[in-house]
Image 1 (cartoon, helix red, strand yellow):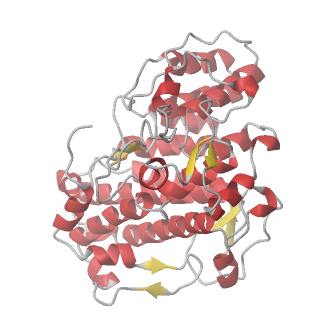
Image 2: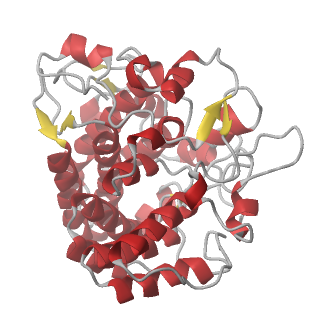
Amino acid sequence: MKNIKPFSKLLNNLKAVPLAFVLLISINACGDKEYLNPSAASEQQVVSDVNGLITLCNGLQYRFTVGRSSPSYTMPTTAGLMTRELTVLNAGNTDEEFLRQGAANVQGPNAVLSQLWAQSNLVKANADLILRNADRATDLATRSGIVGYASIFRALALGNLATFWEKAPIAVGENAVFSTREEVLQEAVRQLETAAAGSVPSALFISRIVPGIDVPNTIQALIARYSLMLGDYDKAIAAADKVDLTKRSVFNFDDLSRNAMYDISFSNRNVTEPINTSFGLPEDLKPDAADKRIASFFNTTAGTNLGRASFYNANNTGIPVYRPGEVILIKAEAQARKNSVAAAITELNKVLTKTTDVVGIGAGLSAYSGATTQASVLTEIYKQRCIELFLTGLKLDDSRRFGRPESERTRTFLPYPQNERDNNKSTPVDPVN
């Protein structure tokens, strides 16, 4: 990786409000209570100018990516354990172990699912705060950067909720009403489309934001992701076509603001580890032994956690916000579901035959030679998504969307956190599985 200004140093050098406000403001997902650090600035002070808004934008990334409570740990860990990408090394990690066991073992008090829910809702609420006040930035291009950045994190938070729960609140409020996951995804797409209409972020915004995220390309990649999950295949293809696959978009880290999966799980052998070097796939879908992604995603050195590789091999290793292969496979799947099988195979082959891409992932395999039926091509696309998108947290939705057997996942949806149920009378009945 090229040298970047450390995340923590960039935040500390911002001439804005105390970072303590950004990190300690906590808005109950369903209540109207607000918990503030008494030594920090008030909300009104924070959002009164460009510096405060950009500091809050940086706070979104910190909350989303740093620490054991962050979605950067809880999302891939939860999905990985539920879809058999990961196993638990130490049963003393009780909440992770219950996710691995699945079914009725996963209950509302589970700390991993509770943090995934809480932090996603907090990111969404803080993004809402930024978006409500974005007009305080009078320069159009700076405002566009602020809106685009906040919209990305709001959409990611909504996408997390729609991936793991059948319903979730969109708006913050006392006894907030729950919307269906389809409505939650539609809101994510709407937010991203609004942001996409803006201009390119200004030099001022780029100079003061934590480097790494390509705002325009990330917006289109996420529109494609969530449109595919909604079954809007034409919109998914159109957005994917707008993504420049030669550009990287990553969450960057340093030795203070650490890569959560490496820091918590893969730097040691005490929490979780990949279950095998077959990406947790069933026997009939195991990867080709010549697939170069096996060596990319797994560290097979004796005594080392298998996951200590690719984007999880050091505290300061960046994690792609989206992978180029995902964008290509979105087009492949959308074409296949439209029964344009030849077009789907064309896109599928781009993933199978690429030797690398801008984030360093390449299979180096031969072109697809299987049956050219819609069902066969979709199965191959599922397999390639499981490999190409390993540990992104997307496999749970993939498993449902492709109609995979329930035996390949330990739960289909999560129960609602107990804290939510205790504080929101609108909380739905938990799903059976």
